[in-house]
Image 1 (tube, rainbow, N blue to C red):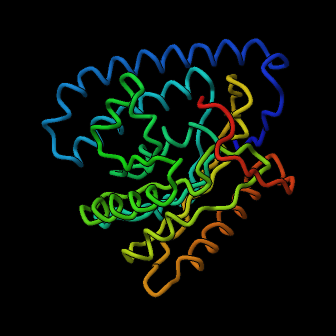
Image 2 (image 1 turned 30 degrees about the vertical axis):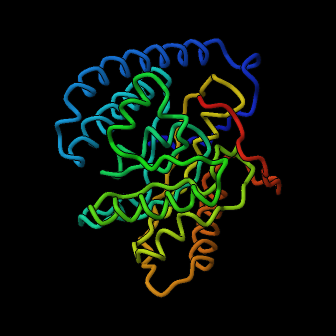
Length: 273
């Protein structure tokens, strides 16, 4: 498989016309796939068991999106550590790097069933937000940090008991390639309080799907799934430091954009798509 590490570092005005056309076709596909799939999902989903609903609503939709991304925008994925993906029915805390919207589409096709810790504003989006609400994610109000942490712990514990994985982006927002943000401890705290195993996830999606431009560049996004970390007896700080170090090391290894030394401090960064 092609392991090109091309980095998309230019603004939309400097990108080839072919990239713009392919990206536009992808967004047309994304819009059609979203409407086409979520209309029957909204009608059928409420009557399905939660795990089945998770796969029906998000799993299939995300596969449609990734299919279009590959064949229209020319973005493929190479998975390292696929053998570490859990299939034992035990709920894991998934702690992932966050660089773009790509991982929110790709991860449901790799590790399922899982729900994400997401900002409550996403529930208001037509079709996508309605379908998202049906799979019972953990909605949080990021403006109220203390309450948000309680929501993560309480909601996460319930899902983990049901054998549903909980996906946490500890940076809280999409961070551009070559930059970092200090990890929040919410995901690590959820894992240590419930003794749930942690699966760390690294990728370089920002190289091809940048926050600074709507235009995507063709190539291969690499994703690394780490071995499960058994958290019993670990402190939240110890676990958080371990996952942050491992993820940053892997991102540095696979990314075409070297770490600049800059840490992003803003509560949010970049564009949604």
